[in-house]
Image (cartoon, rainbow, N blue to C red; front, side, top):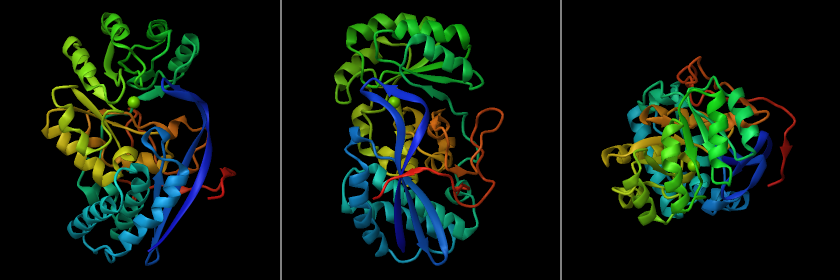
Length: 356
Ligand SMILES: [Mg+2]
């Protein structure tokens, strides 16, 4: 198998700021390709420095992972055997290196696309996952309250909004958003609150129709998360605290929900496994994303039917997604199952390419 990587720098529609880092003006992502027997699978690795990944680490690790995958032989030509082969691919990559979920996702997604295309099946049919998941919400970064409210008004056709918090104007932001938007609001503090601020905000969040609170405190502050969940009628959802399936057990009794992302856990296969294990453990499930193109989002959409809350909007935050084929229906659900594989194709546009 021949593996390629290409780093893309894609301007965002609006600057995207969260509590624990400076605003992003561009999304920097790695598009992967796997060519085998005349077929090409597309994948994506979106590295996030917080989780120890950069375009540099992805570029260094992908060849090592590809070498391990090369030992597996060609994928089988029927769906059940191909699913088992894809699980072996996950295990083979986990043996090479721990963590590095984005690098692994780059290859895992490309393999899923390649295998499903080879079988002529949409990815949901290969995986036997529901063809339709819950609608996606739309995320709005930290900014001046009036700016956030203006963006909320622009996104008011989404059935839920995710508002990034963790700044001094959190309450003002939510009050102003509520004036222009009637639906459920999900808030994400990205580790930016302290316990006193969180406790003070709690009744206001309920009053303002907030549906859930994502990652109020730092990733490892599990006792603090448990303390807030015990006082909160709203579910607390662990994102930064939960990278992979291995983190789930420690969160039982700590938070009500977890946010699974392909780029944290290593792609479609690990995300499916994590969602199923988390369901068994009694968590409410969010499926989230980074600022991926339609490649990464289509991969997520294939397992969205396993989640309760879907936050798959990375491609919608891009000014100009270089991939086409993935579309929302009138209810803001990603449409899957219309084409084989991921169902997305590259459109040639002038993007700011980096040299690997
Ligand atoms: Mg989050």
